[in-house]
Image (tube, rainbow, N blue to C red; front, top):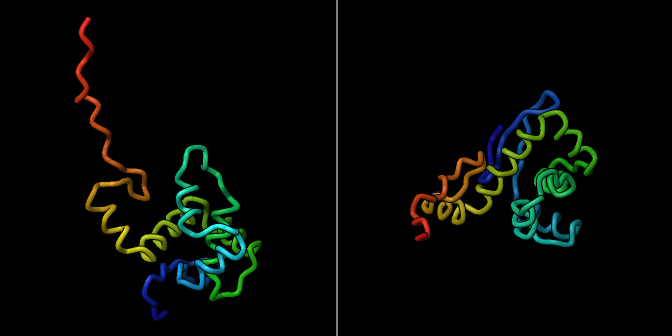
Length: 130
């Protein structure tokens, strides 16, 4: 398969596929969800957002618009490849769609998609005097 810029390849249902968050995918998401892709990303990173299946499914659906899938079909794909793999693919697609932000994130040591952010330096705080 000839890969386009920003396309994240994977296999599902016995065939090669890809996820790509193009401008059209972002507009498709915004029209359906009533929020921008960036707003969705921020919301999914927030406290208590684990398990936001509606956003995850809709983002996968939007990023696979080239296949003309329904949102239910996108959900079936997530079930097949697994939630962890779907989340990884989405993270890769987001970094591919926003390479400048991904580069800045890497340079500052910000949290990566695996959750392996450097631990905050807690030892710097001095104990209060008694």
